[in-house]
Amino acid sequence: MRTPARYLWLLSIFFIWQTVIYSQQAQQAGMVGAGTQPAAPEPFTVVLSDEAPYFNPKRLRIPRGSTVRWENRGPALVHTIVVSTAKGVLHSGSVKPGETWSYTFPATEDAVIKTACEVHPYMYGIVVIGNPSDSLLLSGEATTAAKTSETHLRILEFPLPTADSVPSIMAIDAEDNLWFTMGGGGFANINYPAQSMIGKMTLDGDMTVHHLPTPASAPDGLVIAPDGTVFITEFLGNKIARIDPRRKTTEEFTIPTPESWPTALALDSQGNLWFNENKGNKIGRLSPSGIIREYLIPTQNARPTGMVIDAQDRVWFAQRDGNKIGCVQRDGTIIEYRIPTPRAKPTAMAVDAQGRIWFSERQGNKIAMLDNGQIREYPLPHPDSGPFFLLIDGDGQVWFTELFGDRIGVLNPATGQIIEHELPTKDSWPGGLAMDSQGNLWFAMQLKNKVGVILRSARQTTNTQNAAGESR
Image: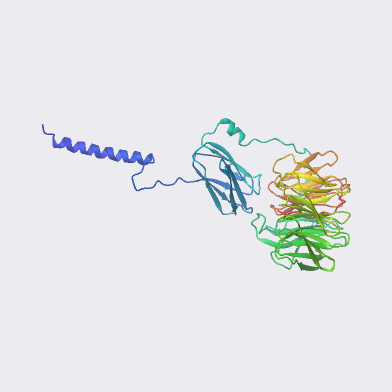
Protein backbone atom coordinates (compact mmCIF):
# COMPACT_ATOMS: atom_id res chain seq x y z
CA MET A 1 0.00 0.00 0.00
CA ARG A 2 1.45 3.40 -0.96
CA THR A 3 1.56 6.26 1.52
CA PRO A 4 -0.06 9.43 0.18
CA ALA A 5 2.43 12.22 -0.59
CA ARG A 6 0.43 14.74 1.46
CA TYR A 7 0.69 12.51 4.55
CA LEU A 8 4.48 12.22 4.18
CA TRP A 9 4.69 15.99 3.84
CA LEU A 10 2.70 16.53 7.06
CA LEU A 11 4.80 13.95 8.88
CA SER A 12 8.05 15.70 7.90
CA ILE A 13 6.68 19.04 9.07
CA PHE A 14 5.77 17.44 12.44
CA PHE A 15 9.27 16.05 12.91
CA ILE A 16 10.85 19.43 12.08
CA TRP A 17 8.53 21.16 14.59
CA GLN A 18 9.41 18.59 17.29
CA THR A 19 13.12 19.17 16.66
CA VAL A 20 12.73 22.93 17.08
CA ILE A 21 10.74 22.52 20.32
CA TYR A 22 13.30 20.06 21.73
CA SER A 23 16.17 22.42 20.85
CA GLN A 24 14.45 25.35 22.64
CA GLN A 25 13.78 23.21 25.73
CA ALA A 26 17.38 22.03 25.77
CA GLN A 27 18.65 25.59 25.67
CA GLN A 28 16.35 26.61 28.50
CA ALA A 29 17.56 23.65 30.57
CA GLY A 30 21.17 24.57 30.00
CA MET A 31 21.89 21.71 27.54
CA VAL A 32 24.30 22.61 24.74
CA GLY A 33 25.56 20.82 21.72
CA ALA A 34 29.07 19.55 21.19
CA GLY A 35 31.72 22.20 20.74
CA THR A 36 29.85 25.01 22.62
CA GLN A 37 30.44 26.38 26.15
CA PRO A 38 27.67 27.48 28.56
CA ALA A 39 27.63 31.16 29.47
CA ALA A 40 29.04 31.79 32.96
CA PRO A 41 26.37 32.97 35.41
CA GLU A 42 26.64 36.55 36.60
CA PRO A 43 28.29 36.86 40.04
CA PHE A 44 26.35 38.04 43.05
CA THR A 45 27.49 41.51 44.15
CA VAL A 46 28.07 42.82 47.67
CA VAL A 47 28.71 46.58 47.88
CA LEU A 48 31.15 47.77 50.56
CA SER A 49 30.89 51.32 51.92
CA ASP A 50 32.41 53.33 54.78
CA GLU A 51 29.03 53.86 56.44
CA ALA A 52 26.40 51.43 57.75
CA PRO A 53 25.36 48.84 56.72
CA TYR A 54 28.95 48.49 55.34
CA PHE A 55 28.13 45.22 53.50
CA ASN A 56 25.04 45.54 51.27
CA PRO A 57 23.20 43.24 51.18
CA LYS A 58 24.06 42.34 54.75
CA ARG A 59 22.73 38.81 54.24
CA LEU A 60 23.09 37.19 50.83
CA ARG A 61 21.63 33.80 49.80
CA ILE A 62 23.24 32.04 46.86
CA PRO A 63 23.17 28.57 45.22
CA ARG A 64 26.12 26.23 45.73
CA GLY A 65 29.09 26.98 43.50
CA SER A 66 28.13 30.62 43.00
CA THR A 67 30.58 33.52 42.70
CA VAL A 68 30.35 36.58 44.93
CA ARG A 69 31.97 39.87 43.95
CA TRP A 70 32.75 42.45 46.65
CA GLU A 71 32.83 46.00 45.28
CA ASN A 72 34.43 48.73 47.41
CA ARG A 73 32.66 52.06 46.90
CA GLY A 74 34.54 53.78 49.75
CA PRO A 75 34.96 56.64 49.61
CA ALA A 76 37.98 56.45 51.95
CA LEU A 77 38.69 53.03 53.45
CA VAL A 78 40.79 50.21 52.02
CA HIS A 79 39.52 46.76 52.98
CA THR A 80 40.92 43.22 53.22
CA ILE A 81 38.07 40.72 52.91
CA VAL A 82 38.33 37.52 54.93
CA VAL A 83 36.32 34.41 53.96
CA SER A 84 36.42 31.34 56.23
CA THR A 85 35.58 28.07 54.44
CA ALA A 86 36.02 24.37 55.15
CA LYS A 87 39.29 24.53 53.22
CA GLY A 88 40.71 27.37 55.33
CA VAL A 89 40.74 31.14 55.58
CA LEU A 90 41.05 33.24 52.42
CA HIS A 91 42.31 36.83 52.30
CA SER A 92 41.55 39.17 49.45
CA GLY A 93 44.55 41.45 49.88
CA SER A 94 43.98 45.21 49.79
CA VAL A 95 40.79 46.28 47.99
CA LYS A 96 40.87 50.03 47.44
CA PRO A 97 37.83 52.20 46.68
CA GLY A 98 36.76 51.50 43.10
CA GLU A 99 38.27 47.99 43.14
CA THR A 100 36.58 44.57 43.39
CA TRP A 101 37.45 41.08 44.59
CA SER A 102 35.62 37.86 43.73
CA TYR A 103 35.46 34.35 45.16
CA THR A 104 33.62 31.24 43.95
CA PHE A 105 32.21 29.18 46.80
CA PRO A 106 32.44 25.37 46.68
CA ALA A 107 29.57 23.44 45.06
CA THR A 108 29.84 20.58 47.53
CA GLU A 109 28.04 21.71 50.68
CA ASP A 110 25.52 24.03 52.27
CA ALA A 111 26.98 26.61 54.65
CA VAL A 112 26.51 29.89 56.49
CA ILE A 113 29.70 31.94 56.17
CA LYS A 114 30.56 35.24 57.82
CA THR A 115 32.65 37.44 55.57
CA ALA A 116 34.31 40.48 57.12
CA CYS A 117 36.98 43.11 56.66
CA GLU A 118 40.14 42.00 58.45
CA VAL A 119 41.17 45.60 59.14
CA HIS A 120 37.70 46.78 60.21
CA PRO A 121 36.11 43.71 61.86
CA TYR A 122 32.88 45.55 62.70
CA MET A 123 32.18 45.54 58.96
CA TYR A 124 30.79 42.15 57.96
CA GLY A 125 28.18 40.29 55.98
CA ILE A 126 26.61 36.81 55.96
CA VAL A 127 26.61 34.52 52.90
CA VAL A 128 24.07 31.67 53.02
CA ILE A 129 24.98 28.88 50.58
CA GLY A 130 22.36 26.39 49.45
CA ASN A 131 19.89 25.20 52.08
CA PRO A 132 21.71 24.97 55.42
CA SER A 133 20.04 23.70 58.59
CA ASP A 134 18.18 26.01 60.95
CA SER A 135 20.94 25.68 63.55
CA LEU A 136 23.52 26.97 61.07
CA LEU A 137 21.26 29.84 60.09
CA LEU A 138 20.80 30.88 63.71
CA SER A 139 24.53 30.70 64.45
CA GLY A 140 25.48 33.00 61.60
CA GLU A 141 24.89 36.27 63.45
CA ALA A 142 24.73 35.29 67.12
CA THR A 143 25.69 38.29 69.26
CA THR A 144 25.66 39.21 72.92
CA ALA A 145 23.96 42.41 73.94
CA ALA A 146 26.06 44.96 75.79
CA LYS A 147 24.88 47.92 77.83
CA THR A 148 25.89 51.52 77.35
CA SER A 149 25.46 54.55 79.54
CA GLU A 150 22.01 56.11 79.63
CA THR A 151 23.58 59.47 80.50
CA HIS A 152 22.91 62.17 77.90
CA LEU A 153 26.11 64.09 77.35
CA ARG A 154 26.40 67.49 75.77
CA ILE A 155 28.56 67.03 72.69
CA LEU A 156 29.65 69.71 70.22
CA GLU A 157 31.24 69.13 66.82
CA PHE A 158 33.46 71.52 64.85
CA PRO A 159 34.02 70.97 61.09
CA LEU A 160 37.57 71.51 59.81
CA PRO A 161 38.33 73.99 57.02
CA THR A 162 40.28 71.52 54.83
CA ALA A 163 38.57 68.50 53.30
CA ASP A 164 39.77 64.94 53.97
CA SER A 165 42.36 66.14 56.50
CA VAL A 166 41.80 63.15 58.87
CA PRO A 167 42.33 64.83 62.28
CA SER A 168 43.93 62.36 64.65
CA ILE A 169 46.26 62.97 67.60
CA MET A 170 45.56 65.89 69.98
CA ALA A 171 47.10 67.87 72.83
CA ILE A 172 46.15 70.91 74.92
CA ASP A 173 48.60 73.73 75.62
CA ALA A 174 48.85 75.88 78.78
CA GLU A 175 46.32 78.38 77.39
CA ASP A 176 43.77 75.64 76.69
CA ASN A 177 44.31 75.81 72.93
CA LEU A 178 43.64 72.53 71.17
CA TRP A 179 46.34 71.27 68.78
CA PHE A 180 45.81 68.30 66.44
CA THR A 181 47.39 66.57 63.47
CA MET A 182 45.78 66.78 60.02
CA GLY A 183 47.78 64.15 58.17
CA GLY A 184 45.25 63.05 55.55
CA GLY A 185 45.51 59.47 54.30
CA GLY A 186 47.84 57.69 51.94
CA PHE A 187 48.50 54.86 54.40
CA ALA A 188 46.85 52.80 57.14
CA ASN A 189 43.83 51.87 54.98
CA ILE A 190 42.61 55.43 54.43
CA ASN A 191 42.62 56.20 50.73
CA TYR A 192 42.82 60.00 50.95
CA PRO A 193 45.94 61.90 49.82
CA ALA A 194 48.55 62.53 52.52
CA GLN A 195 48.68 66.09 53.87
CA SER A 196 51.08 68.17 55.98
CA MET A 197 48.97 70.24 58.35
CA ILE A 198 48.63 70.92 62.06
CA GLY A 199 45.40 72.45 63.35
CA LYS A 200 44.96 74.81 66.30
CA MET A 201 41.66 75.82 67.88
CA THR A 202 41.40 78.55 70.51
CA LEU A 203 38.95 78.81 73.40
CA ASP A 204 36.72 81.19 71.44
CA GLY A 205 36.51 78.75 68.51
CA ASP A 206 39.00 80.39 66.12
CA MET A 207 40.75 77.76 64.02
CA THR A 208 44.08 78.12 62.23
CA VAL A 209 46.07 75.65 60.14
CA HIS A 210 49.88 75.39 60.17
CA HIS A 211 51.52 73.92 57.06
CA LEU A 212 54.70 71.92 57.64
CA PRO A 213 57.60 72.54 55.21
CA THR A 214 57.70 68.96 53.88
CA PRO A 215 54.75 68.26 51.54
CA ALA A 216 52.58 65.15 52.06
CA SER A 217 54.54 64.28 55.20
CA ALA A 218 51.50 62.81 57.03
CA PRO A 219 51.98 64.23 60.55
CA ASP A 220 51.05 61.51 63.00
CA GLY A 221 52.05 62.06 66.64
CA LEU A 222 51.90 65.35 68.56
CA VAL A 223 53.04 66.44 72.02
CA ILE A 224 53.45 69.87 73.67
CA ALA A 225 56.38 70.79 75.92
CA PRO A 226 55.91 72.81 79.13
CA ASP A 227 57.21 75.93 77.35
CA GLY A 228 54.59 75.57 74.61
CA THR A 229 56.84 74.07 71.93
CA VAL A 230 54.91 71.63 69.72
CA PHE A 231 56.64 68.46 68.50
CA ILE A 232 55.27 66.36 65.64
CA THR A 233 56.29 63.09 64.00
CA GLU A 234 56.04 63.16 60.20
CA PHE A 235 55.15 59.59 59.27
CA LEU A 236 55.84 59.74 55.53
CA GLY A 237 58.24 62.68 55.72
CA ASN A 238 60.59 60.70 58.03
CA LYS A 239 61.18 63.77 60.16
CA ILE A 240 60.51 65.34 63.52
CA ALA A 241 59.02 68.83 63.35
CA ARG A 242 59.41 71.43 66.11
CA ILE A 243 57.03 74.40 66.14
CA ASP A 244 57.69 77.44 68.35
CA PRO A 245 54.33 79.27 68.49
CA ARG A 246 55.86 82.36 70.16
CA ARG A 247 58.56 82.88 67.56
CA LYS A 248 56.36 81.44 64.79
CA THR A 249 59.14 79.19 63.55
CA THR A 250 59.17 75.56 62.38
CA GLU A 251 62.25 73.32 62.30
CA GLU A 252 62.51 69.80 60.91
CA PHE A 253 64.98 67.07 61.88
CA THR A 254 65.57 64.18 59.49
CA ILE A 255 65.63 60.73 61.11
CA PRO A 256 68.84 58.81 60.23
CA THR A 257 67.01 55.57 59.33
CA PRO A 258 65.30 55.99 55.92
CA GLU A 259 61.53 55.36 55.82
CA SER A 260 61.44 54.75 59.55
CA TRP A 261 57.74 55.73 59.83
CA PRO A 262 57.83 57.68 63.13
CA THR A 263 54.58 57.49 65.12
CA ALA A 264 54.15 58.23 68.84
CA LEU A 265 56.40 60.57 70.83
CA ALA A 266 56.92 61.73 74.43
CA LEU A 267 59.15 64.16 76.38
CA ASP A 268 61.34 63.24 79.34
CA SER A 269 62.26 65.51 82.27
CA GLN A 270 65.48 66.65 80.56
CA GLY A 271 63.73 67.93 77.44
CA ASN A 272 64.67 64.97 75.26
CA LEU A 273 62.01 63.97 72.75
CA TRP A 274 61.58 60.21 72.34
CA PHE A 275 59.71 58.67 69.42
CA ASN A 276 58.85 55.32 67.84
CA GLU A 277 60.13 54.19 64.45
CA ASN A 278 57.36 51.87 63.34
CA LYS A 279 59.08 50.50 60.23
CA GLY A 280 62.64 51.15 61.36
CA ASN A 281 62.05 48.96 64.45
CA LYS A 282 63.84 51.44 66.67
CA ILE A 283 63.25 53.97 69.42
CA GLY A 284 64.62 57.41 68.62
CA ARG A 285 65.70 60.27 70.88
CA LEU A 286 66.01 63.90 69.79
CA SER A 287 68.11 65.99 72.19
CA PRO A 288 67.35 69.68 72.85
CA SER A 289 70.36 70.52 70.68
CA GLY A 290 68.91 68.62 67.71
CA ILE A 291 70.97 65.39 67.84
CA ILE A 292 69.14 62.12 67.12
CA ARG A 293 70.18 58.79 68.64
CA GLU A 294 68.47 55.48 67.86
CA TYR A 295 67.98 52.30 69.93
CA LEU A 296 67.29 49.00 68.17
CA ILE A 297 64.33 47.02 69.54
CA PRO A 298 65.28 43.39 70.40
CA THR A 299 62.10 41.92 68.88
CA GLN A 300 62.18 41.93 65.09
CA ASN A 301 59.29 43.58 63.22
CA ALA A 302 57.83 44.82 66.51
CA ARG A 303 56.05 47.79 64.86
CA PRO A 304 56.22 50.17 67.85
CA THR A 305 53.17 52.44 68.16
CA GLY A 306 52.14 54.06 71.48
CA MET A 307 54.63 55.65 73.88
CA VAL A 308 54.70 57.20 77.36
CA ILE A 309 57.44 58.19 79.85
CA ASP A 310 57.09 57.60 83.59
CA ALA A 311 58.34 59.70 86.52
CA GLN A 312 61.68 57.85 86.49
CA ASP A 313 62.24 58.82 82.83
CA ARG A 314 61.78 55.24 81.65
CA VAL A 315 60.43 55.16 78.09
CA TRP A 316 57.55 52.72 77.60
CA PHE A 317 56.37 51.72 74.14
CA ALA A 318 53.75 49.39 72.66
CA GLN A 319 54.81 46.78 70.11
CA ARG A 320 51.83 46.41 67.80
CA ASP A 321 53.07 43.30 65.96
CA GLY A 322 55.54 42.11 68.59
CA ASN A 323 52.61 41.81 71.04
CA LYS A 324 54.77 43.15 73.85
CA ILE A 325 55.27 46.24 75.97
CA GLY A 326 58.85 47.49 75.83
CA CYS A 327 60.77 49.75 78.20
CA VAL A 328 63.96 51.72 77.53
CA GLN A 329 65.80 51.94 80.86
CA ARG A 330 67.88 54.93 81.96
CA ASP A 331 71.06 53.11 80.83
CA GLY A 332 69.65 52.53 77.32
CA THR A 333 68.89 48.82 77.74
CA ILE A 334 65.47 47.55 76.68
CA ILE A 335 63.30 45.07 78.56
CA GLU A 336 60.07 43.58 77.22
CA TYR A 337 56.83 42.18 78.67
CA ARG A 338 54.63 39.82 76.66
CA ILE A 339 50.90 40.61 76.50
CA PRO A 340 48.68 37.67 77.58
CA THR A 341 46.18 38.08 74.72
CA PRO A 342 47.64 36.88 71.38
CA ARG A 343 47.68 39.41 68.51
CA ALA A 344 46.28 42.10 70.81
CA LYS A 345 47.77 44.95 68.72
CA PRO A 346 48.58 47.36 71.59
CA THR A 347 48.20 50.97 70.56
CA ALA A 348 48.11 54.04 72.82
CA MET A 349 49.66 54.37 76.29
CA ALA A 350 49.38 56.49 79.45
CA VAL A 351 50.83 56.42 82.97
CA ASP A 352 48.83 57.07 86.14
CA ALA A 353 49.79 58.74 89.42
CA GLN A 354 50.87 55.38 90.86
CA GLY A 355 53.29 54.81 88.00
CA ARG A 356 51.17 52.06 86.42
CA ILE A 357 51.32 51.81 82.62
CA TRP A 358 47.99 51.66 80.81
CA PHE A 359 47.53 50.73 77.16
CA SER A 360 44.79 49.88 74.69
CA GLU A 361 44.54 46.59 72.79
CA ARG A 362 42.94 47.51 69.49
CA GLN A 363 42.46 43.96 68.23
CA GLY A 364 42.35 42.31 71.65
CA ASN A 365 39.39 44.61 72.42
CA LYS A 366 40.67 45.33 75.93
CA ILE A 367 42.20 48.02 78.11
CA ALA A 368 45.26 46.72 79.95
CA MET A 369 47.49 47.81 82.83
CA LEU A 370 51.12 46.88 83.54
CA ASP A 371 52.20 47.05 87.18
CA ASN A 372 55.35 45.50 88.70
CA GLY A 373 55.87 43.33 85.64
CA GLN A 374 52.32 41.93 85.66
CA ILE A 375 49.66 42.73 83.06
CA ARG A 376 45.97 42.86 83.89
CA GLU A 377 43.39 43.13 81.11
CA TYR A 378 39.84 44.57 81.12
CA PRO A 379 37.63 43.30 78.24
CA LEU A 380 35.31 45.83 76.63
CA PRO A 381 31.53 45.18 76.73
CA HIS A 382 31.01 45.35 72.95
CA PRO A 383 32.93 43.12 70.50
CA ASP A 384 35.16 44.63 67.80
CA SER A 385 35.14 48.08 69.42
CA GLY A 386 38.77 48.81 68.56
CA PRO A 387 39.95 50.70 71.68
CA PHE A 388 42.41 53.28 70.44
CA PHE A 389 43.69 56.39 72.22
CA LEU A 390 43.51 56.75 76.00
CA LEU A 391 44.23 59.26 78.76
CA ILE A 392 43.88 59.42 82.55
CA ASP A 393 42.00 62.21 84.31
CA GLY A 394 42.69 63.77 87.69
CA ASP A 395 40.58 61.18 89.50
CA GLY A 396 42.53 58.30 87.93
CA GLN A 397 39.74 57.33 85.53
CA VAL A 398 40.95 55.88 82.22
CA TRP A 399 39.21 57.42 79.19
CA PHE A 400 39.51 55.88 75.73
CA THR A 401 38.12 56.13 72.23
CA GLU A 402 36.55 53.16 70.45
CA LEU A 403 37.74 53.45 66.87
CA PHE A 404 35.22 51.00 65.40
CA GLY A 405 32.50 51.33 68.04
CA ASP A 406 31.83 55.09 67.73
CA ARG A 407 31.96 55.40 71.50
CA ILE A 408 33.95 57.06 74.27
CA GLY A 409 34.61 54.69 77.17
CA VAL A 410 35.78 55.23 80.74
CA LEU A 411 37.28 52.60 83.05
CA ASN A 412 37.24 52.88 86.84
CA PRO A 413 40.46 51.14 87.99
CA ALA A 414 39.14 50.71 91.53
CA THR A 415 36.16 48.59 90.44
CA GLY A 416 37.05 47.50 86.91
CA GLN A 417 33.73 48.88 85.67
CA ILE A 418 33.59 50.21 82.13
CA ILE A 419 30.96 52.74 81.03
CA GLU A 420 30.55 53.53 77.33
CA HIS A 421 29.03 56.69 75.83
CA GLU A 422 27.58 56.49 72.33
CA LEU A 423 28.62 59.30 70.00
CA PRO A 424 25.83 60.87 67.93
CA THR A 425 27.75 60.87 64.64
CA LYS A 426 28.29 57.32 63.39
CA ASP A 427 31.25 55.98 61.42
CA SER A 428 33.42 58.87 62.56
CA TRP A 429 36.37 56.74 63.74
CA PRO A 430 37.09 58.64 66.98
CA GLY A 431 40.86 58.85 67.35
CA GLY A 432 42.91 61.10 69.60
CA LEU A 433 41.78 62.44 72.98
CA ALA A 434 42.74 65.51 75.03
CA MET A 435 41.32 67.05 78.20
CA ASP A 436 41.39 70.78 78.87
CA SER A 437 41.73 72.55 82.25
CA GLN A 438 37.93 72.59 82.68
CA GLY A 439 37.64 68.82 82.28
CA ASN A 440 36.13 68.99 78.80
CA LEU A 441 37.06 65.94 76.76
CA TRP A 442 38.10 66.62 73.15
CA PHE A 443 38.23 63.90 70.50
CA ALA A 444 39.14 63.63 66.83
CA MET A 445 36.53 62.47 64.31
CA GLN A 446 38.90 61.09 61.71
CA LEU A 447 36.51 60.07 58.92
CA LYS A 448 34.09 62.99 59.40
CA ASN A 449 36.76 65.70 59.25
CA LYS A 450 35.73 67.24 62.58
CA VAL A 451 36.83 67.62 66.16
CA GLY A 452 34.32 67.03 68.93
CA VAL A 453 34.09 67.88 72.62
CA ILE A 454 32.20 66.34 75.53
CA LEU A 455 31.35 69.15 77.98
CA ARG A 456 31.96 67.91 81.53
CA SER A 457 32.67 68.98 85.14
CA ALA A 458 35.50 71.43 85.78
CA ARG A 459 37.16 69.21 88.38
CA GLN A 460 38.18 66.43 85.98
CA THR A 461 41.60 67.48 84.72
CA THR A 462 44.46 65.32 83.55
CA ASN A 463 47.56 64.75 85.61
CA THR A 464 49.61 62.81 83.07
CA GLN A 465 51.19 63.64 79.77
CA ASN A 466 49.35 62.28 76.77
CA ALA A 467 51.38 60.58 74.08
CA ALA A 468 50.29 59.70 70.60
CA GLY A 469 49.22 56.20 69.73
CA GLU A 470 48.98 54.59 66.35
CA SER A 471 46.75 56.79 64.24
CA ARG A 472 44.06 55.43 61.91
